[in-house]
Length: 274
Image 1 (cartoon, rainbow, N blue to C red):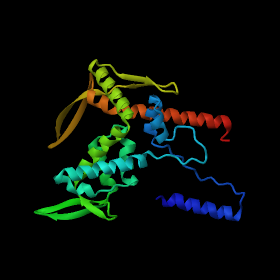
Image 2 (cartoon, rainbow, N blue to C red; image 1 turned 180 degrees about the vertical axis):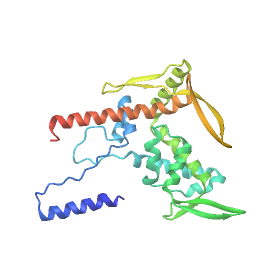
Image 3 (cartoon, rainbow, N blue to C red; image 1 turned 135 degrees about the vertical axis):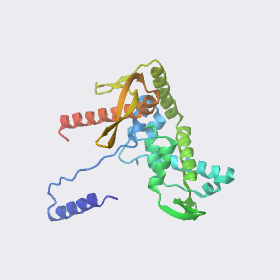
Image 4 (cartoon, rainbow, N blue to C red; image 1 turned 90 degrees about the vertical axis):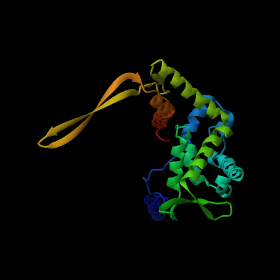
């Protein structure tokens, strides 16, 4: 998927073939198993969910778990059943999504992505096809099907798939819904009291979230028979409840990501990467 990284790997192998003791300097990329869910799992101390995102102690003989694979079958089943039960979405009965398609949806759900955002993620992953309709053209998207081929779905059908995926993530792991709702509710309460959200990360950094409402004023200035518009934004001393709610979970998780990286760097420095 990344030609430049693969080329670097090939050059490394060539160098090792010439000299088995050669020193190589190509970065090795290490990825977490859906770090957003990992952080929420740690806060919840949910053992079942911790197992799905590889946070429990394991041996070298054990294969890592994959939360995307765990969710793939129930997501496809929900989409198929919805298609069978709703004739206007009958095409969904033939859908068989793969991990590559649903991964962005699952990964960003805990970052407060909306169903609309999920639909856009699906659009980015699927091949577009132009279809002719009366008085114009309409875009369709190639989606894997249960017979091994592909079917064409429109944007409305993709949005319905996104809403079904959105629901299924919390159905499969209800504790995620619990902590998700907690953060949303407490933020709304604090916003109604016009109080900012604050928390301290494991690294000791105090974070404050304070999105204020604003008022814009447009002024037209005429000079030498030309008009130039200028927009002035004035911040009000009142919290923006919607922005506070939408941002709280992503900001908490990003702050925990940063703390995690700080801990990794500090521990690596202690043992000199040994």
